[in-house]
Image (cartoon, rainbow, N blue to C red):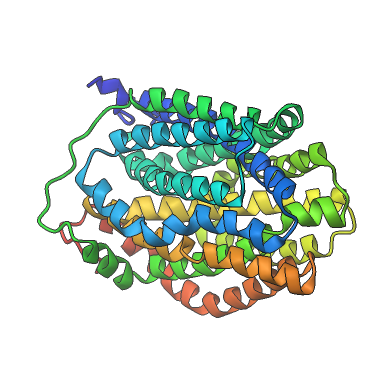
Length: 420
C-alpha cells in the first residue's frame, strides 16, 4: 500500500486531502455523469410508454425499495468485508444492468416492468455503494477536512448527476433512446476501474457483528436518531412531490424534452454552489442553524414548485432546493462520520439510511396517487405542508440533541461500542 494514499495529516501546514480521496472523487464524478443521463432518460422513456402517473411512480418506487429491504444486510456486509471491493463490484454490476437496458431499448422490448426491475437492481447496488463510500471516507480523510471532503463529493454528484448528465441524457435520448443508457454503462465501467485502485484496509475484528448492534447504537443516540427520523419524513415528502415532476413540467408547463434536461440542470447549479460554499457556511453559523435554515427553506421551495406558473420559476425553485439539500447532506453525513465508531459504521449507517430512505417507495406511490386524484400540482403542495409539520415536530428534539453534540462527537474513538 502506498503511504501517500492514506497520509492526510503529516505535513506541517494544514492537512490536505489524500490521493486516494481524489481517485474516489473522480470515480464519483464520472459515474454520476452517466447517472444524470440515466435520470433524465428513464422518465422520458417512461412517458413514451404511459402517461399514467401511477405507473410512472412504480419505476421510482422500485428503484428505492432496496433501501427498505436490503439496507440492514448491506451494513453488516460492509462491516465484515473490504468496502473498496464492494464499491467497485457494485459499479460493475450496475454497468451490466444498464447495458442490458440499452440493448432492450434498441430492440424495442422495454416496458414499465422492465424499467422497474432495472431500477430495483440498480438501487440494490447503490445501497451497498453509498454506505461503503461513506464508510471509507474517514479512513482516507482527516477529521478536520470531513466537511470539505463531503462538500467536494456533493459538488461532484451535482455536476455529474444534475448539471452535465441530464442535458446530455436528454439530447442523446432525442437522437436515439438507447444512447443515454449505453453512456451510463460506460461511466460505471470507468468508475469501477478507478475504485479498484483505492487502498485496501482490513476491517477491524470485533466481537459483535450483529445487525442489532447497529439498531441499538442508533436508538440510543439522540442526535442521529432525530436526524434519521427527520430524514425519513423529508425523503418521503420529497418523493411525493418529485415523482410527478416530469409530468408537471411536460404536461402542465409545456416544457419540451431538451427543456426538461435544463430544468434538472438548474437544480445542479444550486447543488454545485452548495457543494462549494456550504462547508464555509457551516463553519460560520454552526451545524444547527445550517440544518434549520435548510429544512425551513425546503418547505417554502416545495410550495413554490407546486405553484410555479412557468418553467423559469420552476427551474429557480429547483436551484434553491439543490442548494439547501446539499447543505443538509454535508452536515448530516459529516456528523455521522465523526460520531459513529469505525467498527459499527456500516451497520449504524444502514439503519440510518433504512429509516431515512425506506419510505421513499411509499412516497413515490403516494405521489402518483395524489397526482392522479388531485392534479399534477398537488403532490408538491401536499409534500410542502407535510415537511412543515415534520419540521415543527422535530425542532424541540433537535435543539435538545444538538446541545449534546460536543460530547457525542468524541464517541467514534471510544472503547465502548454503544454511545453514552
